[in-house]
Image 1 (cartoon, rainbow, N blue to C red):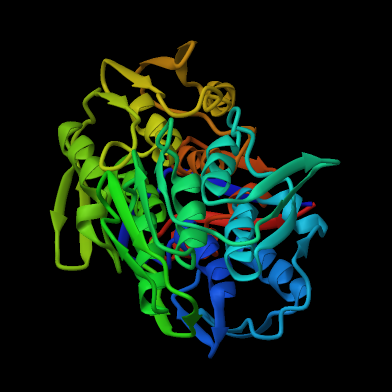
Image 2 (cartoon, rainbow, N blue to C red):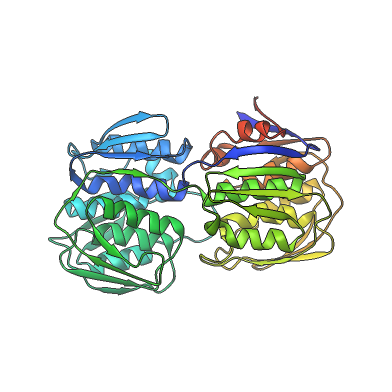
Amino acid sequence: MERLLVKGGNKLFGSVEITGAKNAAVAILPAAILASEGVCVIDNIPDIEDVQCMEKIMRSLGCEIQRNKNEFVIDSKSISSTDAMIEEVKNMRASYYLIGALLGRFKKARVALPGGCHIGVRPIDQHIKGFEALGATVEINHGSVSIQAEKLVGTNIFFDVVSVGATINVMIAAAVAEGTTILENVAREPHVVDVANFLNTMGANIKGAGTDVIIIKGVPTLKGCNYSVIPDQIEAATFMIASAACGGEVTIKNVIPKHLESITAKLVEMGVEVEEGDDSVTVKREGNLRGTNVKTSPYPGFPTDVQQPMTVLMCLAEGRSLVNESIWESRFKHVDELKKLGANIKVDGRSAIIEGVKEFTGTVVKATDLRAGAAMVIAGLVAKGETEIYSIEHIDRGYPHIEDKFRSLGGDVTRIYK
């Protein structure tokens, strides 16, 4: 069983390259299924477990995939099955994007119900609402979603809640529907925009991504293209927070600073220096941290995926801090692990009240989910002594070679086998 051993106390210095966005890549890869001719050459794909899962699933459907480091060459012309039922489908949340892609291309699909991190109730009702509005019939039974349509016809769809997954999934299917589809109350996250840009590069006609309303004029077919995935906003934020927690000075390269504005604003509020470049941010912290309040909200608000790493930083700040988690109801599982290290946190419903402590003391902790795992690594980097983190398969789902990147900055992080 693999674990991470983190020895704390080192400041971080140097620079680190951010890879392609996980949340964009795991949607763009299945969206390539819509290319009925030509091949999709997709660059800047992160080397993470979720991508490897999606690659295996797509191969099982008949996709031909060549991989060269961070570049994927996908030929979807030879797809022989619309049934995505292998075990990997159940292990990752983003496998639901296969529904929209297969429905759009073949007008039918059977996909195992998705898994992913246990951070609260994560229904796919808004996805189903969108597909049914386009003319599909949906059945859920025996742990799978079966969907089919004689044809997909554009319409107006108002989502009951802002959902990144539903926005992307319905957008993928609607790209090849007849007529015009108008999606309202949609998610505005950078990876929503990235998927729309990818579809447009394939020949789709999508406007408004990044706003509250997306207008899609359906086209008969899509073709292969060349595309590069945007940098990972969440990985970048994780290294920004780690730099602020440990002290020192780190330049985080290959980022889009605008995507990081909500994180930058909070770090500055806490007494951290952040300097923005064209495609980089430099984080420097010498003095004490000040407490702050954070409320997660859809983009451009503070990302829920950054809440757990940010909680670590707030634990080390002077005075009281408050976290309000407005997106997921079960995203405080990392709190019990942080308490083992010496954190002073009280959870009340969707809020966490944090009283700052002078230091953490290393111990054995669990990565309860992907972003909680990143939080444990940051906590270990600032803790006195050694911290051993288990269940790190969660970390590997979203952070490529995390131990190598932190070691390059002076952090003492080692993968061990026991």
